Image (tube, rainbow, N blue to C red):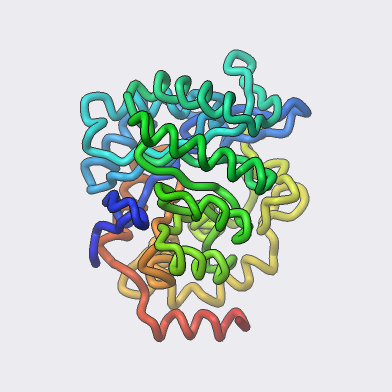
Length: 326
């Protein structure tokens, strides 16, 4: 398959597979004690995993200032080191947190905070520019978002960022950012179980990339059958916005039944289940760039291996829709 894709009208080329850096941020939580990370991490293994992803052709890394309350950015910056110029770096802003206590405090949608957050991210990542800067408040007021879009245009003029995007599942909100000259993408949920036709249509109309979070449905499409045993893992106390997990951190039986029904198609051509889930995303639109998470060399290798197999066929896509009743 074409191993590269372009971030919309920015012309920035990235590997067709991105690497999501939420998990390598380690443990952090809300002020109410809700876990927001993916459990414990080994930073040295995270660094090895990032470098392995690079060696296997990964050039797009997506993080956020809030992941591990700054820790993900620090680990990623250290792992990239002198190879910073070989990659396209994406991060996000909008959340307020305490780095010491690892607690999320709230959100701030002001242009002044955007500038403070950008300065802090550049410092943690050890770089002089962010390639794709993304608003991380999914339900921000559209009027304020228009103001933040103009702020991002200022950042582009100053050479601090190359392009920007909004991480939101609302096409109407994403369209507000799309009006900006240097808007390059929308980041939104997309996986076999959760299609997003309206957002993909917007990306097509506005010449944007579709950056896909939850491409493996938080592990369910990687074959995870039960919830995590680690209490620091967000799936151990799943918030309302996390589909596919029932109470008590067990996977939703209905989701598992549907995934089982798709297994033969997704594991065609010798793919693992996770590789098949990524292949569905690439087949769904040439604008998609899935960003599965990873925190070990093995996971980085498995995810990267999907690129060798390429997308599913149009017939397989149709068959999946039929099975799921779409």
